[in-house]
Length: 318
Ligand code: NAD
Image (cartoon, rainbow, N blue to C red; front, side, top):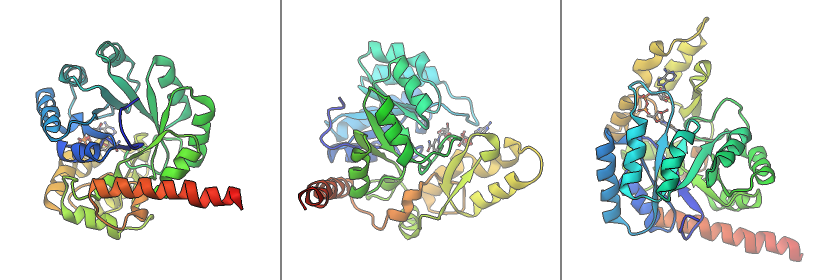
């Protein structure tokens, strides 16, 4: 459906999903994703898509995330830019994408909707999405409020969905890919793991910090606001949690100066790891090197093939 060689899709990461990374993933046979809101205007998004086209002739997608933001976002204009760009795959996330579907469908665009629950996946199927990306509690960024891990979500998705689906959250190696396929998914979506690659357009300090981290190094912030986000556990995340732990309802204004996305962008640029927050999933515990996207995808696919043919095959033949 996506016209890609390997069942590996790059997550739509704010400030990270630039043409450099998206084209590297697509050139390696996966599906690279440009993040729409990383571009300051819809016009800049069009230019970024053009830049990506100059770097790859393989398919790539654009992510459009619809969640609360500090500055209002002209979602409609971003959606129109995606249509005008001629890109043929879009990943929507955050909220029901129904208002944009007629336009996307009329342009022949395949829609992958990212969902953190089965009920939202079923709704996405009902409204005509072509595929869903099922995002378990392990994931980076916004895992929703249900806290269901992929060992439960993925088999449920396999039982209930008729459309294909990707497994997202906690994936970073060939064992994960083989497990996702066994659980019924058609491929995996990886965000955090692609941040620790040579082509990810972020500071080396961030990549190295994720290599050094363990599975215990993420925090869940904004729980009190019902906009939960899993981020790397740094001093800023801990300050946010302290504010949220105070009695009474947390006001977003109390934490806004700490969490604004622009600080996260600066952190990615200058490598000052306590400047802001950045999204990271539990999979940081499985990251111990910084390969190229090509090396990473090849390794994951080879490892998964070996597990399926050798380890699992031998169990059947034993
Ligand atoms: P931003 O600077 O506008 O906001 C920073 C963070 O605060 C975001 O997580 C946002 O959801 C949250 N936020 C903003 N206003 C809020 C409110 N009134 N109540 C509760 N939470 C609020 O956002 P950004 O960092 O520039 O990111 C742009 C978009 O990308 C946002 O929609 C954000 O949620 C999304 N995003 C998603 C992920 C992910 O992993 N899924 C990661 C980073 C950002």
